[in-house]
Figure 1: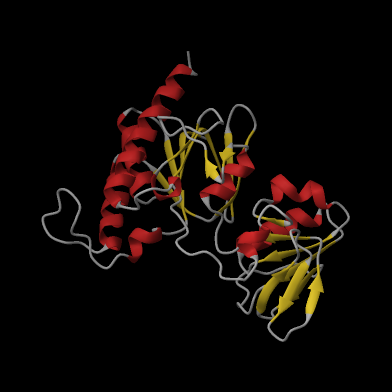
Figure 2: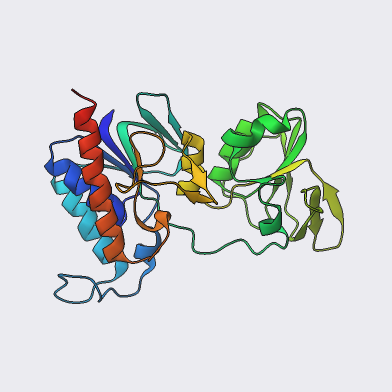
Length: 288
């Protein structure tokens, strides 16, 4: 159990952690990788660098700084986030992490999936949140788009509710072990099918298959996915945040690339600091 649970250990997450640690809080960071920063070839436009650093080197400096101040850092992929009214519970592949306040700093997916019809049918039979929408597909036949641990988690949740689950890998190799009761189709997809409402998929060979719903679980769970699972509000598809980067769920904050806007290290560090300070204030007020 931690005071401050931070999902992601990029610039925003580490920045928030440093403020929490200096305030004497117990801080737990959980991250899968360094995200966009770790892939940056060379960082030159950031304050205080004596010489250019690779993104990975800068990330490692930040992680060491947090560890030296007493942070706990777990390398894990978070697939679920729940709020029971008093604490946040993040479920990962390797473990479970709890905190009295939570900051989402998971970065942002840079690329949209190119399957034709995806954008048009979002919210009309195409969902990104099993916890939010599985109820509407009771005893129905649904598909999950993905091939990894996140897709496995969503499929397992759906199996408790729906009639059948088909995994659509779109040609990708499986990176998780799926149970036998999940049907697996490795065909490449050409498009989604449906006039105003999703009704199935069309494969590259021209054949079609009908489904009642499609749950997208590509890669890892994003901040949007996790926020929806925790019950946070959205407006026009955007996560609702106040001036302190707090969501509509008390004690749940977001910072960095996952909030949109300018995707720069300097901005992420600033948002992380602001969310960290706000989380400290929230925790102190709720301990009175």
